[in-house]
Amino acid sequence: MRRQHQIVALGLLLLLLSTGCMGSSPESEATLGEIQIEAQSERPVITFNETVAPDSTATIALESPNGSTVSERMTRSDNGVNRITVPNPTAGEYTLKLIRKNKTTDTKTVTITPPELRANINADWGTTRLSQAVVEVKNEGYLPTDSSVSVYKGTSKIYNTTSQTIIAGDPATISITPTGGLYTAEESGSVKLR
Image (tube, rainbow, N blue to C red; front, side):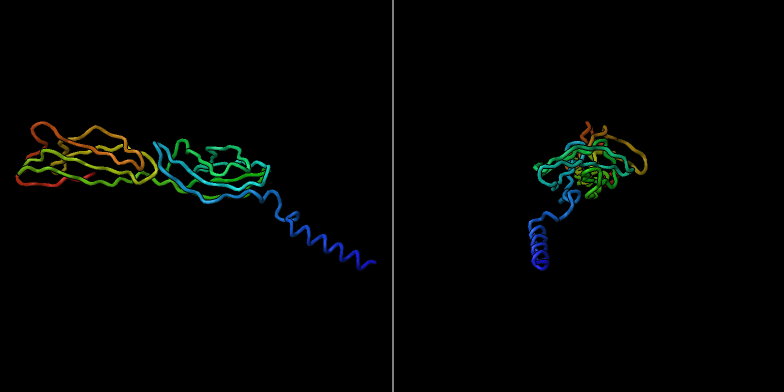
């Protein structure tokens, strides 16, 4: 009889394990999936998915590079893909945390890079007169920045455009076409972005 009780108890234990009743604890049933960051308008947006146990909730918290929580909200098991627009973004490493029952169950990090400008400069030199300059600028970082175009003769600035905000991910064109030309030199020169 005792042997039968042991076999029944072992069978029940195997049944519980196979159905997941003794699987992972509820705290571990909240995980973060792949994280992506994209530049949108003037602030980066973090897109991610998470898995939360059925019929339950968790908190998603975003910490800035200095460790302060800049965004926090509840999520449900059926949310799927989530998006967080980073408020008052600065360059650095952010931490995304998934918290369930006051316990952090998963963390992921994402780096917001500073503005990084790439420029293509087209200068129109008649013979020795710079009559026009067109600068196509693209910001390959995640944060916006202000930029202007200047023309120098040696180290002296002789012309400057007004500052223009270059949004992350969006190309911009800055043109200089003043009346009478920008600069007259003894020979054709070059235009550089500083």
